[in-house]
Image 1 (cartoon, rainbow over the protein chains, first blue to last red):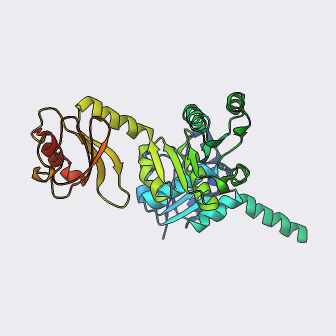
Image 2 (image 1 turned 180 degrees about the vertical axis):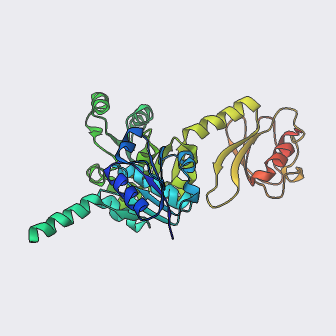
Image 3 (image 1 turned 90 degrees about the vertical axis):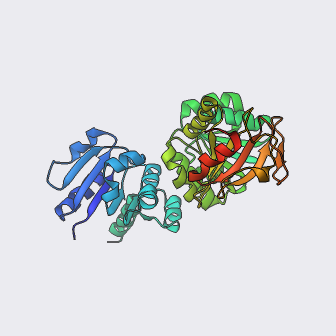
Length: 134
Length: 221
C-alpha cells in the first residue's frame, strides 16, 4: 500500500529520498525552511513542496503531519531532526518515524529512547572501510 | 551547586551572573564565537566557546558531576537536545529548558526535561493576573493528570473572608494546597483556617471546575 510520507529537510539527501519514494508510488510532502532548496526537485504528481519549519507543531500540522503514516527527518542538524521526529512520534503519533542523527553518542542515546535513527556519516564510513578491503 | 548553562544570550548571561553571585560553580557554553568572547571578558575561563548539544563538549565541561543543566538558547531544538544528552548520557539530576514555542512544553516534559519554562506562558500568566485583577492564574500543568495547579487571590469584600475553609463551597474536584498570606508567608491548609483579604490560595483543580473555585473564593459571578 502506498504510504503518506512527510519529509523534513530538502537537502541533497532529503531530495533523493523524496524522489525515490515518489517513484515507488508513495504520496510525499517535503518541507524546508528555505524555498531555494526545492530547486533540487522537479514538480511531479505525488510530490508536494511546502516552506515550513519542522520544529514548529503549527507548521507540521499545516504540512499534513496528522494524516502522515511515515515521517522522515533529514536536515543537516541533529537538533532539528531530534525535535521534529520526537514531535511526530509523541505529539502526533505518526506510525513510522525515522530520524537522521550524525553524532554517534547522540545516536546511541536516541536509539535507546526508542527513536529509529540513521547516520549518513556512519554509512559512509562503513562503505569506505569496505572499499579499502577490496 | 555545579551548574552548566547552555547559551549566553540575554537569558543565559543574566542567569550566569546571578548563579555566580549566589556562590555557585558555573560553566557557560556558547556556540557563537563573538558572543563567547564578550562573555569571557566578563566571566573569564568559565566560558566555553562551543556547541552545548555535543556530547564531547558536555563531557569536557564536566557534565558527569554537574547538579543542574539549564539550556537557555532561543532554539527549542537546541535546548531539547542539550537537556536530553545531559539527562540520558550523563545522568544529570536536573535538566531545565527554556521553551520558546509553548506547544512544545508537554513534549519536553514527556522526554525527560524536568522543568520546561515557556517564556510566553510566564508572561501570559502574569498578564492574566495583572489585567483581570485576580482571575484563576495557571501556575503549573500536572504531568499525567488533567488537573492544573492554580492560584486565586482573595479580593477585599469577598464573602469568603473570615469563613472557615471547610465552610466554603469549593468544587469537589478541587484540592486546596496552601494559602499564602499578604506577608508572603505560606500557611498550611486546615479546616479551621480563615481566609483574609489579599490571601493567595493555591489549589489543584480540573479545568472545568476552575470557575466554581473562583466563585467560592472571590464571590464573583
